[in-house]
Structure formats: structure tokens, C-alpha cells
Length: 102
Image (cartoon, rainbow, N blue to C red; front, side, top):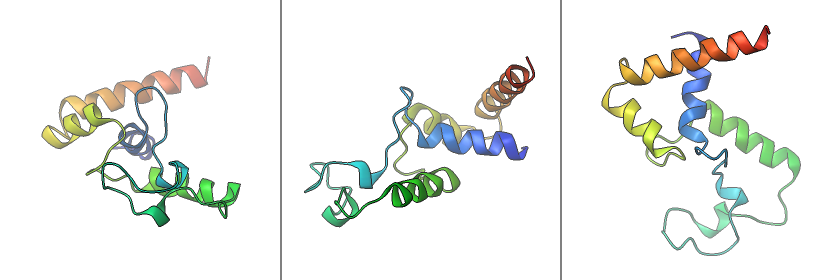
């Protein structure tokens, strides 16, 4: 897998289909009704653009496969990482490359 397709793979797991980025520090302060996040992991007024960007970079570099934003992509990746999912990622990379040079 190329570096570009590897990045796309991580992005697909970490970003929801509608483009929403699921990062704990952007979630409303307080208790998580689903019990996945501790209150101190959620929004606090001390966060800056820098801390949020670091979180985005961390999410893209090492997405949580146990708690993906794109459940369908994560399911495909878990069930057949070198088959259908890899082909979809490769197709998406090719389209992105074509668009970059148009």
C-alpha cells in the first residue's frame, strides 16, 4: 500500500461519511451518555486551535479502529483489509491523483 493510500485508509476510518471529525475534545463538556469518554477528555475552555489541530493530526496518524467515525469503512477493513476495502482505497487514491492534475 502506498503512503497516500495508507493516509486515505486512516482518514476513512477517522472521518464520518458526512465529513464530521469525531474528536473527544470537541464534544460537549460533561459526562458522555455512552460512557466512552471521561469528562476531562471532552471540551474544556483551555483548548486552543493548536491543541485541536494536534488532536486532528493524532487522529489521522493513529485512528481508533475500536471506535471509528466511519463504521462501514472500519467493518470492511476488519473483514477483508487486503481485498474489497484496499481496492476501494486504491480507486479513491487514483481519482484524487487525477483530480490533482486536471
